Image 1: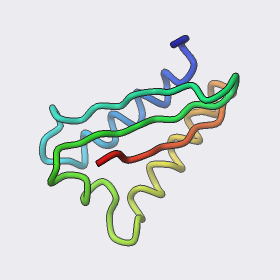
Image 2: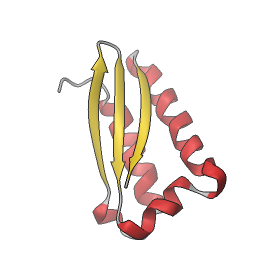
Image 3: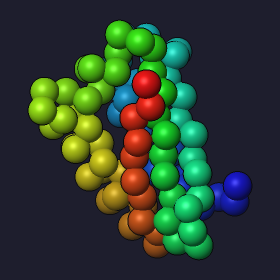
Image 4: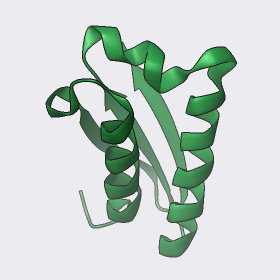
Amino acid sequence: MSESGKIVEDVVGYIVKQIVSNPDEVSVTMIEQGPDEVLAEVRTAKGDLGRVIGRRGRVARAIRTVAQAAAEEEGVTAGVEFVD
């Protein structure tokens, strides 16, 4: 992977690690989906996924919003997927 999405990876990783109980279990994998589109796949420990998604998906929505703002710094669009 090129450096596309590096800021998104750092920002999403930092935010998720602050939320979960087991920050060592967090992994963020960046996938290029096109020349100017990236996807961040976030994996957490079993019990932490609910904390990251939040009630009615509010925390997940906020993480996606911040990721998109970080992506604009790089001139790309970003998506965030939470993998079980």
